[in-house]
Image (cartoon, rainbow, N blue to C red):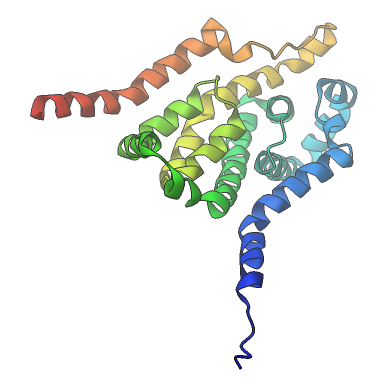
Amino acid sequence: MDETPNVSGGEAPKSAIKRFAPLIVIVAALGAFFALGGPKYINMDFLRENRDTLSAFVESNFIVAVIGFMALYAVLTAISFPGASFLSIFGGFMFGTFVGGSAIVIGATIGATALFLAARYAFGDVLSKKAGPYMKKFEAGLKENELSYLFILRMIPAFPFFIVNIVPALFDVKIRNYIISTFLGIIPGCFVYASVGAGIGAIFDTGGEVKLSGLMTQPKVIGPILGLVALALLPVIYKKIKKTETA
């Protein structure tokens, strides 16, 4: 009589729990953030009512404030909190366009990379195993022009930030290319929001309202971004032309 215990039934659930643990932590952290009332601290009303307190704290603890802001931005990006634009305004208000924009870029890149790694750990090989011919072809095209495509995804405002954080992980892109394209690709948008934040005090003083809707699609903003998108497409176009010539 075989008395060897059957462990196969227990291994699969344990493996699944381990695999999805990072995403479970992220979802739990997002839930806790909302449950503890986090969103009430990241909005225009809070900034308007507490701007003197925030300014005084930054003036007395500049380095600590910058590091703390980057850490907060990284955490909120990693848990996909849908209020990055407001937090970017805070960064510009507290630290100015250059320092604030730089802190936003660094914090967002760290947080996006953490979410990317969590998604890859959970789903990394699932899509490649189940993908059909079209998805296989898409993945092949992505890998051939990986850096260019990732830049484009980052710079076009139509793509939600948290979606672009996750999708590349499903196609097994290189982590180096992901970090480079994230860091450089989000610079235009981050500095636009930081510049708005840097001038928000004057808007508050006049009793004006800050309107973020449509900010990234204004001609003076979207024009340079589309120019960068065109530059990112040049390597793709060049490769296609070379293929045509050698065919």
